[in-house]
Structure formats: C-alpha cells, structure tokens
Image (cartoon, rainbow, N blue to C red; front, side):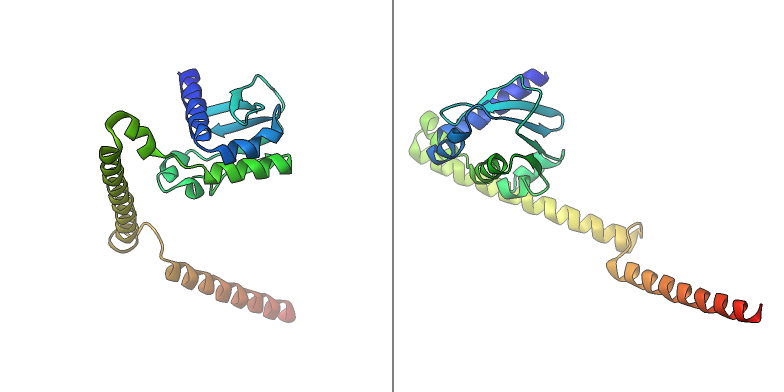
Length: 190
C-alpha cells in the first residue's frame, strides 16, 4: 500500500514539474542529489535527475530532509504556503532553498488537465465550480472550528479564554510575591 502511495505522490510531483519549466530549471543543477520527504504515513526517498524531475532513490543518506506534519494534506487545501507552514527542512542550504521555493510555488493547472478531457469551456466552468466548492468547504471548516472553540470556552468551559489565562497568571504572580514576603518576615522573626 505504501509503495502505491509513494508512486502516486512521485507521479503527482513530476506531473506538476512537467508543467513548470521554471521549477525544473531550478532543480536541474542539483542532479544526483537526494532528499527524504516525510509526510506520515508517506515516506519518499528521492533524487533529482538531470532534467529537474524527481526519481525514486535507494539512498540512506540525504542532502536534504523535509518533514511535514500529518495535518499537511488538510492544509494543502488552503494552498502550498499553508501546507509548508510547519515543514521542517534540514540539510544543504542551497538545495533546501531551491526545494522550498519550488514546493511553495508549484501550482496545479487543473483546468489545463480537465480541458484535455472535456474541452476548454467545460474545464473553465468545472474549475470555477470546484474553486467555489473548495472555498465553501474552507469557510465551513473555519466556521465549525470557531463555533467549537466558542462552545468549549463559553458553554462548556473546557478551554480557557486568553483573558482567563492572563488573569490566572496575574493571580499566581501576586500569590508568589505574597509568599516571598511571608518567607522574608518569617526569616526576620527567626
């Protein structure tokens, strides 16, 4: 199962690169260099070929590692910037910089791919329809999250509000200061 997911991810990355000559040109100078892309449960070990595409690699040492949190697929719905927000990139600075730039700026031209199947006009309309649907999904998710936070703060106080946390911290500080003063008086009496 993991091999199928890894193959699908590699195919998707290379499909995006096929439509982005600028990205391949940015990666081609790093031909032969390796990277590990970890997005649990997916783990890709890749190398860069002379044309700037990714290929599977059996390397055990990597020039760059990119670790993505499990929430990345959900954040990817908001765009590449959101998907890579919590990425941990380590290794060779020049390659890490190039990979980060390429991954942040790669875009899928879904309308171009759809137009090959259904024609230009239908692809444009489907693209707009999907865009509106994803926008609605994002807004619905935001609304749900905001409502849950409000519910758990106000109706079922499981979460503390920032004001309550600040008030608690102030009270703890005052209590600590009072305790210090009491200890000093006890020392003077003793």
